[in-house]
Image (cartoon, rainbow, N blue to C red; front, side, top):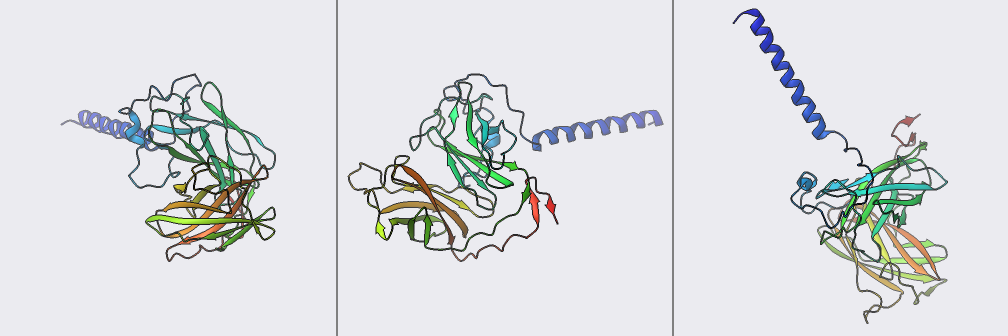
Length: 318
């Protein structure tokens, strides 16, 4: 083979390697751009045999750890959260056909639940956005302090038999100073209410947890329904912020569930570790949130975070 022929073959080989690298980069790169907003029947026209397989997760993986699953993707429109003063946070749920989903089946009385919490499990918020005709959801949202926040969306598209929980990180810019995880305790206080926790988290099973609400030393027996129950419990695993499945035991009007003082749940705990529990309950026309740290199995609490400040993008400040 003469020299020009060898050089031509070498150049073709480089071109092939370069093209393969470009293809791999597209596969493992960031999310695709959000499609232009347009009104679509995201629930009625989803194709279960479309590109959803690329986003599927293994059975048993806790919710909230992925931005996409079974062809559905959480696509933020807003770039981050302001600190202190609320501003509209906008996003879409994009379906397997690439269009925003506009049809949902309500779960716990709402078409979509949004949970926001900082990566150190502080600043918890549970809100319910409103959806525009084009499938864009919006809700006023603000961060209590700078840092990286996890946004969870819990929803059920009309085309699915089961709900999904998708999550994505968004920044709140500024000097980030992570807080240590509070030590486990059996009681929590909020606005003059005391909530006592009984039961333990057991890895690999559904753990029964009962929370008793009292005020000024007296049991509260007239809790008001909130999201089709007398309480709503969110459980997040420290570290990766896995979102646990939690089910209330009974519902108002079923003939056996009392409006307090006890609210019972079953939490499916996937592993040993530290968890943060957030109980929303309604009394006297106001929803309050009591927070607990609980440890499953023989796990120990994580060490306190470093004292140095960080900004919302992860850069440290000495």
